[in-house]
Structures are given as structure tokens and as C-alpha cells.
Length: 119
Length: 110
Image (tube, rainbow over all chains, first blue to last red; front, side):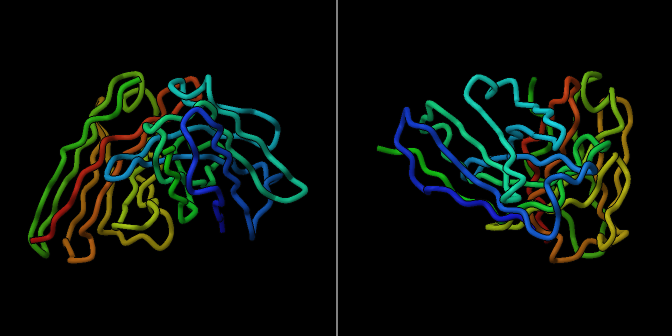
């Protein structure tokens, strides 16, 4: 099970920070990647990036310059930082587990957390 | 990278079959065996229903099937039921460890 947590509201130009708490599995399980995705209200899904226990990090080319994903194995959680946010970053942010060796298999997903960028 | 192309909406009557297409390029859909499909109800997180083009996770009804031909992947839902109504998204590996989604298709059960 995955559960996102975050501030709900972020001001333009600031940094968005989210955490995904994982239960029932371990971030050190080498069968999985751990990823972040988002969905602007009323729009489609967008992959943000994925991280693997071994340290491999992969980011969407369109967000790469602003994104950092990290693991905290002691707390069994992983995090997303997105800097210099604008209104275009307003979205529901999801964390999800991705199967290693299966390029696009995200299962399960967290319930999502709505992040609004506004002053 | 561009988003994969899906029809904005499809519809069908209960018991019928519908097919949702997902068109990409030889650099994504056509280049790898990594295409997945997600079902999403309003206000809920997406749910995996097909992975690796045609494989079904345990617990997903066999009314859902996936296929691929060239640069186009397809999701077919047979024996349409009222609770199949929702949004469907395709997702493909696009090389260099990147992933792209389609714009989504709204399925209406008439």
C-alpha cells in the first residue's frame, strides 16, 4: 500500500515536496522501481520519474531540470521535490510501484494528493 | 516525446465489445513490448488492467484484452458492463528509461 502526503498548497516559484509512505513491501525489494506520476485536474496522466533501490534514477525529459526523487529506506518512504513551480504544476500527484523488467507496469498506486500552486 | 494518441471518447451498449486504440511511433509503442492500460473512475487512482501489451493482472476480468500491431496498441472490452464506464489510458515505454501516456479515452456505456 502506498500513501502520498504533501502540503496541499504551494506558492509559485517555491519547491513542492511530497512523500510516499510504503507499507506491506520494502523499498529495498529489487523486483520494483518506485515512481511518481501526476494528473492535472480534468487532464491526462504524466510520468514524472522513477527510482530503484540500487540508486538508478530516471526522470521525464520535460521535468528533469526541476525534479529530484529520493529514497529513505529507514522510513520505507520515497520523496519528490519539484522546484520553481508554476500554476501548470497544479495536479493530483500519485506515487506507484513499478515492476522491474516490465517497462510500464505501475501497480499499485497511491490514492493521490492534490497540489495547488497559487499565491 | 509526444503523448500517445487515443480517441477522446468511445461508447457501446451493454453486452457489446468496444476497442480503444493507442497510436504511437516506432520509438515507443512499435519499438518495445511494454504497453500497459489503466482504468480510472472519477475521483479514484488509475488501476492496471493490461501490461506488457496483452497480459492481465490477477483479478482483472478476462473481458479485457490487449494487443498491438505496428505502432498501434489496442484495448478491447467484450461483454460491456455498466461499471466499465470510465477513463482509459494507455502507457508505453519510449526508450532511454522514459515512459509516456496517451491522452485518455472516456468510455460511455449507453
